[in-house]
Image (cartoon, rainbow, N blue to C red; front, side, top):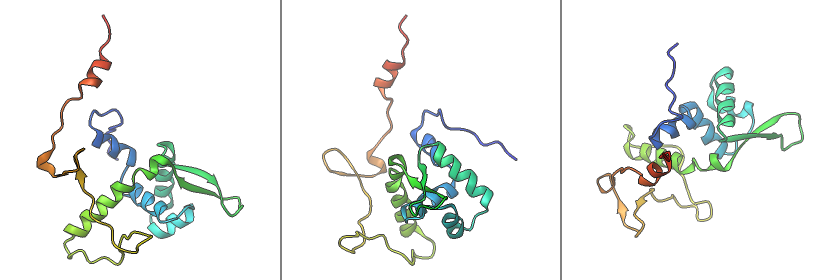
Length: 158
């Protein structure tokens, strides 16, 4: 088996995010947790992945602080997997992936579900990147620059 490269210490925030979130199984587990699934058997049934794969992914998500285990809400001996604040922070990422797929799907974006505003029942607007002054920004309107504050903090006094 090929050894996977770790991006845990990478300078790039995108690479570090991918390290933390793992792979597609992990993102689908997080998606299902947002949909209210909490038990191993629920994740396994909904995803249809092998139990050993699910075990490894759940363990990693707990170790990375994205999920936590809690006693079963029904008082049984089982444990449940619950999103942490860090895990809830993945929500906009999942929405962005969903909206990207809806827009660029090869079959015209015909999906059996819609993401709607719970209180109004209407589809949510497409996510937008905005400048501090409120302008909508596209990929040509941004650039990545060195963070001079970080470089100053890393310098070791002579």
